[in-house]
Image (cartoon, rainbow, N blue to C red; front, side, top):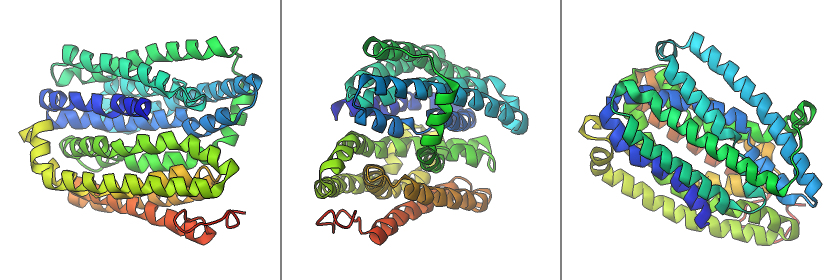
Length: 410
């Protein structure tokens, strides 16, 4: 648990440390451009990772021999090479068809490259062999170096691309170290295209639900940028970063319990259901406290972190704070429960529906209500995802709060 919270600190808290500095030296407009490029680059990361953090972790955790693990590693590596190539082609299309990216090509390409490199790091392997602490140490060290570099090398709007360059450089270092550690234990095998396609087919359902979930959670700055000015994107992105960093405190808890719940299900579904219910009580309680803190503290939090030039972000933060209990519900009953039961397709349908609703609402609300409209689109779509998961569990008799025996699962 401490190791995963260390990785959370690296992914959320360390970047947040640089936010007060970047928001002030870049200003709302350049900050908005940075956020839009980063939001698009997350799509590239998502494509290359392909949900292997869950599917790859599960397969390695359940592998019985070294040969099986080596085959999984070779398959995932081959798949990621294919996906990285596709991600670069998609970036080319974005350059040609999105005017803001044509005007800022260096920002686009450094953002995309840094996220692709980050997605190639074999985090799934460390999770699968239950050596999360190793991945945590690597990630925290690299991101700490990147954060330090931002203070040293980014001094104005023209330096925005250096944020992604530093991230890409440190990610490349842990990519090399991570593979060296992996191949010191298991024999390296040359990635094969055929194995790569096989892994893509097997993880397709996992990719669909994870991509849908990530798009409407992390990609909204890019969506907003298609309808609003860079300054408006800056106001939204500032509040979104604060809210995500706070709400992200909930995710490591369920991340750690995911492989344990997967193991429990094999022996006793009732014990797994009991563990899931307890998890939800804990995470939901913490999420409510976070909502109150962000709603009533927005007028203090935003000026301190973003500066006085981001006053409109206060209302956005209040709206986005309503996501916390909904995300707690989705994390526990979706990621920790539906996935360990093998109900990827059901989870996928729920998240795809939430994505469609998110984009539809964004098209309607963002042009008219700008950043506030985008925030409400996010909250409403998150609510629909939580409601959809509840409906799936009720219909299948898999509500962990009411289950008493394993017969309902059978």
